Amino acid sequence: MRLGSKRRDDPELNLTSLIDVVLLLVIFFMLATTFVTEGRLRVVLPEAGAVPAETARKPVVITITAQGSYRINERALLNNSRETLRAALRKIADGAPGQPVTIRADARTTHQSVVTAMDVAARLGFTQVNIATINQQTEE
Image (cartoon, rainbow, N blue to C red; front, side, top):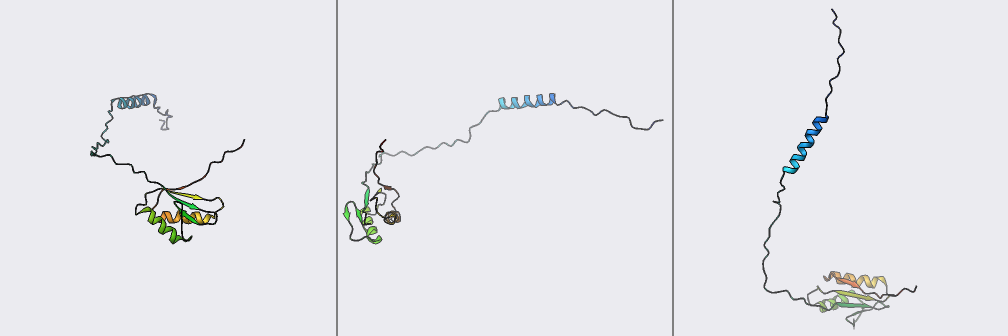
């Protein structure tokens, strides 16, 4: 009697039919699913009778000369100190620093003078600061 092991063939699994069935199930669930839009939020906005009036404010113009002296709306200041510039800007703003500020600096002025004007305006609450330039036409 032989008690030795017989060589057995490894069983084969045919995955082709399994992949086909899974693919058909995925397609079925994709077509049968309804997409619910519950995430939308409906908001009813309140109504107002008056339209807000646009108040066109003239911009505050800070002019800086080549020597570093300041002029606000073409009015010369007594001296070139930060405190004088702050007081003049505060007086022009009248407690409403929402006005735009335009800085017109001479090309030969020091960088420190421009930075000082921007710093004083920012500390007073001015948020829209513009720097005026001229447009030079390039010769071709």
